[in-house]
Image 1: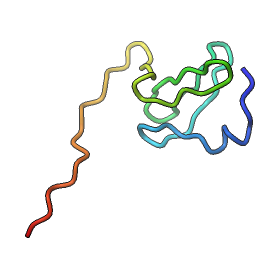
Image 2: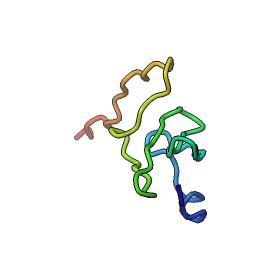
Image 3: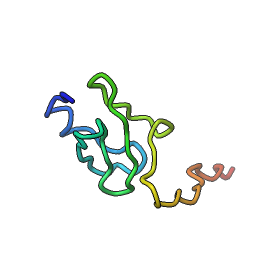
Length: 73
């Protein structure tokens, strides 16, 4: 895997904004906070939450409602 060090400095987990660690053996980026594992294909990090996987034995987080309440008139 050949990733630009400058790119690695600015990339964060799109889910929790945590820092990432390179897993050279598996061609993946691993979030140090939430544990999501993002694949790297042809030296391109696939930073899509839908493409990420959770490590074995780690439960999925509870869904959250990120929507703001409607504005009062």
